[in-house]
Length: 252
Image (cartoon, rainbow, N blue to C red):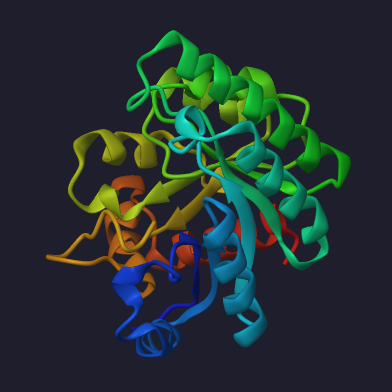
């Protein structure tokens, strides 16, 4: 049975889709993925995300600045991306992914720089009242602390503690469950404990595939039955709630 869902986070502009991008998008649509949110991570992917959103009216772009690139990026490069975000703000449904990645970055200097840049990104989301998409690997607590006053925040591909998740939910933010939930015990416990009204679903394609090889937006449906089982609900409860939440989160 086909349900309607939204893949709330994917990277269709990445090279892994160069050979069959259009086919991949069409496949997702045939499976019931009615909308896809394509997240930029740097200058080039922001440009590409905007292009995709222009070409397909059911693909929406968010403009990002990945924390993974921050430690080694020049001030000039960072400024360039921040001003790109502001220039194109009207064409985007959100800002991000951006945030903190303390998993890959272990130096104090690098982490401080990530934090400083993230503050600037938060300011843009705040000034323009845009949804902020957070990449918060091993830095979820601080990311929450920094964004608690924002109206619409999505913790994408959440993998932090259940305790922090409860605080994120209490702050009224959204938590996105990736297709990792199909095989990761930790993500299963996240999905099980996450209130349905705060849940989004995503593939983060081309990463985190629930099948062998490359992930793609149509696979977001794999996680629906898993989440339904965990929460002892109908699959339609999951699809209906997550589609409504995503539309609310990104004002679609």
